[in-house]
Length: 187
Image (cartoon, rainbow, N blue to C red; front, side, top):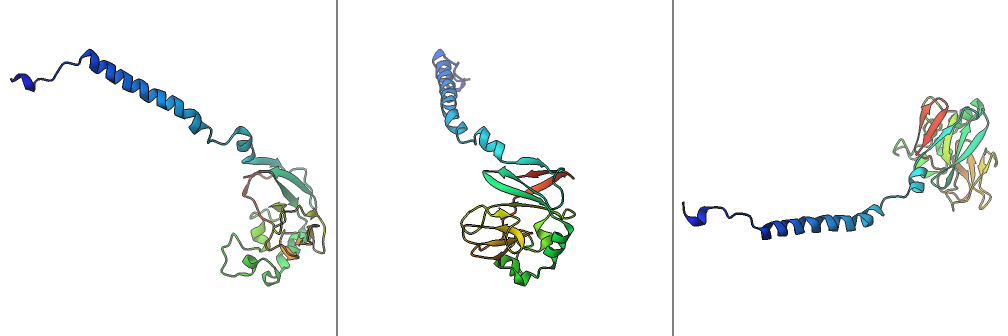
């Protein structure tokens, strides 16, 4: 075998080069980690991502307001009369263009059944922020007994649908799920 065909033995210099390279990679990773970690949301933001609410004390006709992501969310236990009145409204009478559009996505439909969870039509969960300019509407006010925005006169019915005034859309419904019959997770 020729002398050029044999692999060279590692030298002390080779070891030092490999060790210095590995040390450099670890150093760069350690220096970069604080910059990468600061992009994660802080604990207060993660805590606001979802909220669990016990609704066992909310009687028919009553509502509670909780905060979620800095916005008030109303949870109303509607009476049977309010649910029936909501179902009786013709979609053509509603102001929200998504509610009137027969080709709209079912999630955008403003029928009473789509404003509440299936089997829990009496429980209404929605963000209580006027869709006109972001004011907070008053509960159980206005000609439809739902919500009235005192800033510019928008009137919402007991299903949170815009019925008159300058607001262009219904009160938004946040993502929520029933964990049990008496506990809801919003977000």
